[in-house]
Length: 136
Length: 498
Ligand SMILES: Cc1cc2nc3c(=O)[nH]c(=O)nc-3n(C[C@H](O)[C@H](O)[C@H](O)COP(=O)(O)OP(=O)(O)OC[C@H]3O[C@@H](n4cnc5c(N)ncnc54)[C@H](O)[C@@H]3O)c2cc1C
Image (cartoon, rainbow over all chains, first blue to last red; front, side):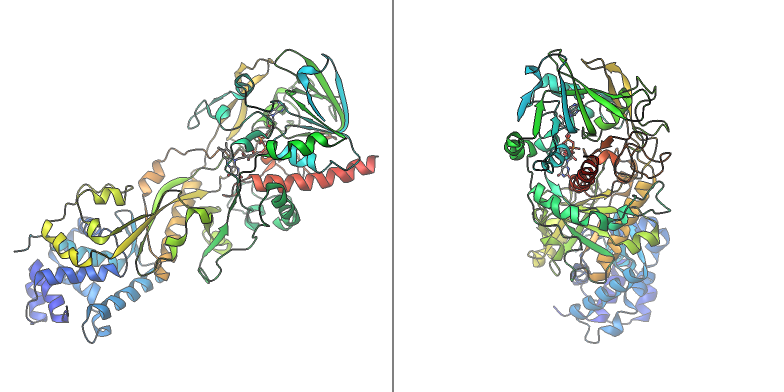
């Protein structure tokens, strides 16, 4: 499955109702199922074992985030997208892994639900946790 | 020669150049060094060849929480070979930093550096029946440039009584006396030297042992107790002018509150099988920078948990895979599981591990005398174990730094149940240390750098009761090395006196 950058961002935004973001990225809406799958694939490269639990815990601890998906999107993807010119999962996954490593390097880590993770990993988990509605 | 005190005459006095009390790991090791020395040796053992209930019960005592009352009885054995009759046999050298005075660890520092023990560790390996120890970190490439060092444990549960009995029995100048319980260290009237050890059998016989030099090798609790109960010449006991005997007592406590999760991508840590017996720890520079005590990270002796990501999301699987996490809140929708079918074969691996912080020495942690008496009329022990809170800070910080190091290297992610760590009722590790700590200054230690009781010219202590600090490493290998060092010293002292 090839996932476009547009699809990545809009899938998440559509799922979480980010109208503003839609205007910033006026691309076709990707299938939400693909979106979710994609986000999980990203997590696989960094071995975060309980993405939903971690994401929900982070959202609970940071109440403002729930209505602000754009913040999470920016935090996770803004610096990843230039590193993934073809927009493949593999490219993004590599960029994601490097980002997590850098954050461990600089101590930009968080402890959520007992797991000690890079900030980007936690934010990615939170993105997944934003989208918990049943799939049609 | 093997003797049984029950067969000796009531009132008999046994004489030798060297008298060693206690035939466990330390006592037997010491005696073995004198087999061909031309010196006569008495090796006194309170137990017999087999475990007997009334003999074992001599060890009974009481304890304050968190130790159970049964702790003094259960955590050692009273028979030839001592507690090596049920030890696991894990052998590991202490680290150089364990011997160093660290300003953030009160009362730390040994009278010598680890290099002093190096040749004795080599000899100790022969006594323990293992290969020469690795002093440096193993796996230098795996954690190259990282803050983590890897120590190799060797395991061979040699039963000292069984293995060395014949050698001891056949040595012409050695008498091994079973069922000979030391009941008093009898000082001369000036209290400056030991005249004899008073001995007793459970059958009611009284005997005595006289020698030029005496060594108590009664174990990490009983060494303190014997000095405390011998209070007829000095009311506070032998070597206790500064109220130090019994204090700074330590045991290892493990906190099994952490896990590492490793993905298919890099399974380096999956190969850290328990059989490998490897212990990870932060290197010295990091310990200094963060003012941490030495803390081991030991992967637990439970099978690795391995499952697919698909299973991770199945109801119930969460608990099974990560039992340290309360995970009841999340019940993923079945449609989500469907999507995971595509990743059915992707695996995650979990390994649980324990944090094993060195215990910070504290005078409040101690062996004292209780009110109950044993059949010889000696007061039984009462244990008071306390673990300073700094221990928890170290365990926590060590786990965090370990997590960061693994994250940086892409080796895995770490979970620590910090709440459980803070609230943990710590479990003892049956590694008795301290109580008669070593220090050149008599106001700070019971024995000097040669393990001689400061105020007594001819009384030495062997075993972990002399350890000033505890490391995270199992103690017995260092007990053996220290005992061999003491043997060399005593051989030259006895040689000079002859
Ligand atoms: C279950 C268990 C597992 C262990 N596993 C390990 C391990 O894997 N690695 C490790 O390093 N350590 C381990 N240990 C600790 C290890 O057993 C001790 O460190 C070691 O045995 C101490 O040696 P010792 O000679 O000082 O004392 P002991 O081996 O206890 O010997 C003391 C001897 O003195 C005798 N004695 C006591 N009182 C008197 C008296 N009044 N008169 C005459 N004789 C007396 C006793 O009968 C005994 O023979 C373990 C301990 C336990 C309980």
